[in-house]
Every structure is written in structure tokens, then in C-alpha cells.
Image (cartoon, rainbow, N blue to C red; front, side, top):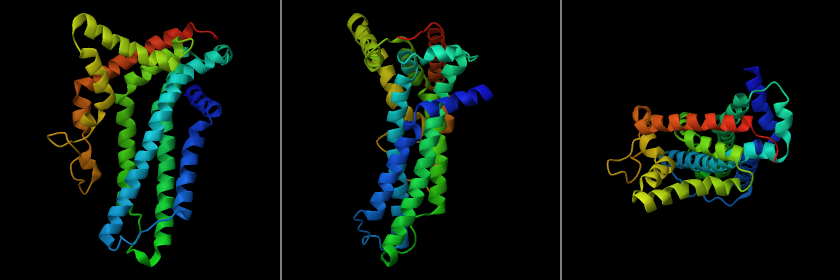
Amino acid sequence: MSTFFWLIRREFWENRAFWLVPSSISVLLILAALFGRVDLRIVTSAAQTTAFGGMLLGVFGVAFLLVMSLYSTWYLVDCLYAERRDGSILFWKSLPVTDTAAVLAKLATALIVIPLVYFIAADITTLLIAFILSLRAGALVEGSFWHADLWLQLQVTWLYLIITIAIWYLPVAAWLMLISAWAKRSVTLWALLVPLAAHWAARAFFGTNVIGNQIMDRLVGFAARAFHLRADGARWPELPGNVAGLFNPGGFLTSPATWIGVAVGIALILCTIRIRSRSAEI
């Protein structure tokens, strides 16, 4: 456990963007709240203040989630390729650190640690912005833009998303790491071309879209399993008093697609460990 902890620390030492990117976003948003032009005269009642505060938490939370998703994807594509490119893999192989521990530490960093960092940054940012806007609005609005119940619901939502996203996108993360450990150049291109080539071959030779459909379902099918959607699937239901009413952990955990993805992800991770054990610098 101590070795695994230090491997996680290593990722922070080698990738300062882990905290620089969310910190930069936080600073920009806070500066915009401090000095930007904000017209809050339309917020005239306590109910509107609560609604605006909830929208504020939701919009900033989604913004951090999108940036986090993009950065985690880039990290997965680059993490094992970079250590071969700069030759640092030779140094780490000289230490009593197994390839299994090294790969699993990078996987945990991408799926758990990075989302937690963005979660903390989003929390601090939304708290400060709500406080700043409440002070700037002064007598123009009734009440504060920060509400404990909405803020606590955001915490629950973030934690639910971190856990379910890590499970659902495990095969995607494992695939990106496999390519990162194997490719000698153009890692992103290989990561995209191989699935596209498999989809094209299935259509050309067997007349089926099954591979393409499975890939698309893995990329965009998360919400349908993890949340309660309307019967027509057109949009989210109206927000209940407790946001946990949107969650569908039972449906997510009992979906065959969830556990098929986990099995595929484990197989790909085992392949990644095997490839890294035979890797050297590029």
C-alpha cells in the first residue's frame, strides 16, 4: 500500500497540470465573479435566488467535469508512452516496483485521483463565487446564492459520478493505456484508427454494425444506465427535492453492459501490464 501511495505521488510530481489546470479555471472564474459585469436585477425573490444558486452550482460543476474528462483522456493516452519516450521507464524498472503496481497506479490516477482533484476545485470555486455574487448583489436580491442543501446534493452527485464513471469507462481507459504502452508514435491516431478499422471491417465483410454500436453505446450510454430518464429518453425528469432521486444505482449495477465492460477492461489491463513488462525506451 505504501508503494502504491508513492506511485500516485510520483504522478503528481511528474504532472503538475493535475492541479494547475483546475486551479487556473478556478482563478479565472473567481476573477470573472469579482470584476465581471453581472446583472442580477432579475433575481427578485427567495425562490429565484435558490434557483439561480442551484443553476450556478450545476453549470460550474459541469464545466469542471468536461475539462476533467478531456484531461483524463489525454493523460491515459500519454502516461505509458511518455515514460518510454523520455527513457524514465528504465529508471523505474530498476526499482523494486512491479509493472502491475505501476499500471494500476496510473489507472487509479486517471479514474479516481484526477476526478477528486477537480471535485475539490469545483467545490471551492462554487463556494467562493456564490459568496462573491451574494456580496455584490447586496440589497438587489433576497437571500444568499449559497444554499447548504443544494451544495450537499452537489457533493453526492460528484461522488456518484466519480464511482460510476470509473466503472463504466474502465474498458475505454484500459484501451487507451494499452495503446499508450504499445505504440511507438502517433498514439492518439492508433487509439482511434483501430476501433474505426474494426467497425469498417465488420460492415464490409459481415454487413453488421455490431462493433460500431457497441463502441457508441460505451461512449454515450452511461447516462441511460446510471440515471433515471424519462420513458421517452428525451430529457432529464424534473429535478426532485433530493437529487439522489435522479440516480439509478440498481439499474447501473444490474446492467449486463456494466459488467461486460468491467471484464473487457480487466483483460485489457492485463495485456497492458504484459506489454509494459517487455517495454523499453523508444
